[in-house]
Amino acid sequence: MKQSLIIGAGGIGLAVAELLCQQGDEHNITIITSNPTLLRDKRFNVLLVENHSEQQVASCLATLSIKFDYVFCCLGLLHQEEIQPEKNLSQWRVDSAMALMQANAFAPLTYLVHLQKLLSKECKLAFLSARVGSISDNRLGGWYSYRMAKAALNMAIKTASVELARSSNKVCVIAFHPGTTDTKLSKPFQRNVPENKLFTAQFSAECLIRLMFQVNEKDSGKFFAWDGQEIEW
Image (cartoon, rainbow, N blue to C red):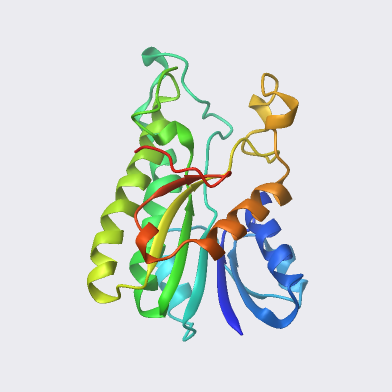
């Protein structure tokens, strides 16, 4: 039986858990979430955190002795009550940028730091990124803080892939762009998305799981889109 860890059980994270469950007894699923309602779902081993601070992450992972075969980090933040993507430089604020950096880059990397002893020798890890975090692909501008945060996450993943290869040359860590998915994160920005380019959480999760089953250590440190195509950093 494979051991799978899902960090963040929002739209895509929960869809990944549901789909893995449908594969019968092939996966034992652990979920780390701030959603207490999932504690009632006996299909999963649910660990509750109030937030994804370093103290919470360290305390949570210290309770585990599992060696994970798959890790899906589905954390992300684009907007909040007083945080909206910037349309121009004059809208950029340090506090907003730090909040997005914490959610999109610092928290995922904190999990990776404390997960090192819990990874199997051939573990595959995927972190939800976004195409807008690609410097090469940036042709529209705007969204400064979100782009910066996802670019920082991408650099962390690339750098970690180099280090992890030294201790276990079978580990594979990748960044994944799920496309525009119909979740709370994208809800205010769906108006101009073509109908066939607005994906359900289940579809994005299917793409992610399929990719995770296909990649190997030679793909570690790469950035993939939902359709399996590699994205330039």
